[in-house]
Length: 319
Image (cartoon, rainbow, N blue to C red; front, side):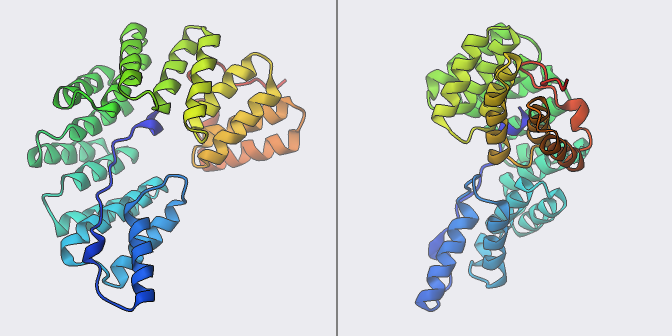
């Protein structure tokens, strides 16, 4: 569920600051600026890297915007899981503007993704010094505690974020996910329901509540929530994946494979999706195809074979 944390918000580049040039060049700069600041997760991160790099190489933005462009290119690298380049760009952003809270948060998240929690917490602490009322600082720090499986501290950070912003969708989602991992089902259900009240079109809220129902073996309710998540967001990777697990455990392997396939297409960076799609293909008798997926997933993430058991049930068994 870590992939569902939405703690990296991108700043908007002021297109009015673009340098003057020919009409065609202005159109190109406008398009590159649009790609650089307007993140679309269905778009490949490489396109955003190219766009931000163009703005930097052609000096299409003024000095005042450099930290924004570096930060946003860093986030594109982060999405591509190229954490070294992401951190380098966040370094550049902070060299340009040492008071830019967002880059401290984002760099901290990149350090956490690398497992360097000491540097991650140092960045979150610095972000809090710069902007102590920013709830995203506490969301990010909570996320690092969550990654360390320190769920009580994570929940405390998310709760403080909610105190600062009682309408924070991210804070309710993150706290609910931590409560779910702690098996505090009553508290998690309250937070998922509260989030759905605040934002009935939040696909991740339905995925999380569906996971809760699945863990309580309420498969009918779980399927209804996963269906709703996919109706809201047809590209919900976790919605498809978790629905696929329920279908696989019910013996509907063809439908399960379709959901795992949709999850891979929505998020090819998550090896767990490809690995489980391979297992489903093996069960369906498509062994060459299944083995290719399993091998590719292990090459992508060698730990996937031992970590692939989904939260909502058992990984489909190969017989």
